[in-house]
Amino acid sequence: MTSQLHTGIKGKLEQIVAPKDTATAYGSGLVEVFATPAMIALMENTAHTSLKEYLPEGFLTVGRDVNIKHIKATAVGKRVWAVSEITLIEGKKLTFSVEAFDEDGKIGFGTHTRYIVNKQRFMESL
Image 1 (cartoon, rainbow, N blue to C red):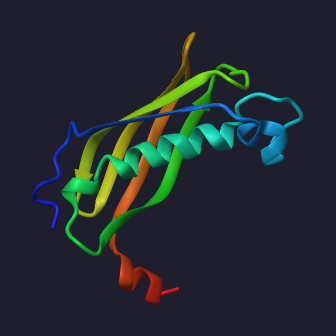
Image 2 (image 1 turned 180 degrees about the vertical axis):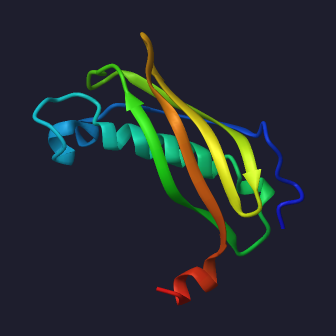
């Protein structure tokens, strides 16, 4: 199943920070800046979408661990993007290096772990 997967697979997604992406909207803070949970969601989304062409029909990845540092605030209206790269493959466990940026530089970084699962079996196990 993972024969096509290899370390070095990269992903990149970007967005404009909207009011729905702020710490106030998420309930994670009291300021109108890009929320840490929103940044982490962008990083996770970048990692999992980078795998679409590598997984067989019926399989996807689910997030398990995040170890992220959010080092700089970003205002509403600014463009942000995340990049991911697979750094380790251990069977169904995939480890990614992830980073986030805005127009002024790096805003966050860390690692993210995902597991390959059969979607139907995963949903049936709930």
